[in-house]
Length: 537
Image 1 (cartoon, rainbow, N blue to C red):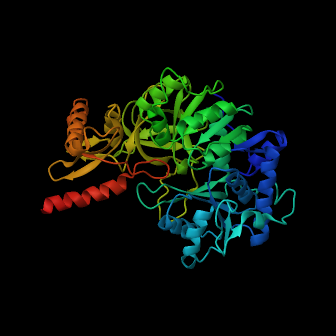
Image 2: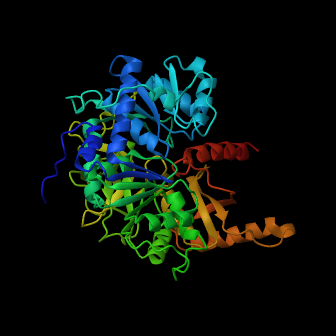
Image 3: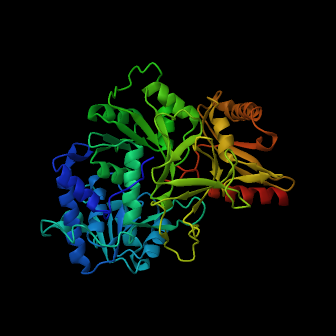
């Protein structure tokens, strides 16, 4: 296998390189608006000029909301080009999470949509570092009195290249702070370097087979730097789909000649369950250039992947990674996409191994343990110095995920280290139980966690969202219980004794993070309180 190499460039130079190579090539399409690479590069220059003028120094932390639009791409690369640090801001979170991100990162200037600007204005006295709020969608929303519309901020800045053009000499300097989703505790600030992000962009472009002829359709609630950086690295065109309707996203893929369709598992599950999506393909917009559907963020149920593959006629590819890995480390290939439950082989230039939970030594093929990864995409560490980086002296990063590798080096994930629990001395994987439940056509979605048990340590609790409410309204409650009992009995017949569902409840919806991950910690906390109350009664 040839040795993996990547350009020795700062992050923003990826965009400059693409603009030089193909200035008239389409970089972004969003609705009726299209930007060429030259136009996007010029917008990044304007943002960089503004930041250089607004701060008069390098090293300021700038909050950038990762909205699914061209503004994010320009402010993201423009912040890097100005010599400042990007702090990614999720515009879907509430005041508590915003306060944590802004104070932990000491954000001074923020590029955010109007709704987030309103929240920040209310919190201004509790954010001593924040001195400037720039509203990125001023044309669509109300601008708070002490905020600045983006067009006003950029009015009068000079044209032409900003800063050094080629960025800082130190490619190992931190350029981006990305906060984890906080599913296992308070969100952690991940410190990513120019080298981390450029290397991972190159790795992803190779793994996803992106070229200048590729058209990537992003059907995501937010813009992810993984898709932005890899497409810009390859000089590919990106289509941003802001319509939440899954069939509308397929129609857009057909109209734009998309070659790659990117979606979160939560949205892909809805697409797979959509009655308009049938294996006969009647009424499904034909996308003849489409080569793959790409899923990442959390596990996509094999049944959903199979339905999408049958309906669309293209491979459904699962990837694996996390913020600490810039973010991707493994990816299925088109050739091995049908391996059930697999997340693929390591990306080019990436090493992976499984270590025992107690021994911390590498284990044999097929043996289960914690996944460790080593490669140029491994973060520089966490923002909080008190937070262990989980990187050993040899560069191995402990992911906190449990899995195993087959004889071909393909990785299979079992669960998060913090999500698994023990029934007696047996390890229970919530994800494994959820996969069995998800095979039942009566189940729309489900979530599994451990219910505290004095005898066994913990037993399986399952929350199930039914696809249909059974029976007439006056008998619905009893009918729901009967269906839940039937689903549980069917699932338990396929589960080991320690995995069997002992408690089950109907849910209106599975609580999820903005990226679609189940909020297991929140559920566990609620169930512990209920279990304690039951024990005391």
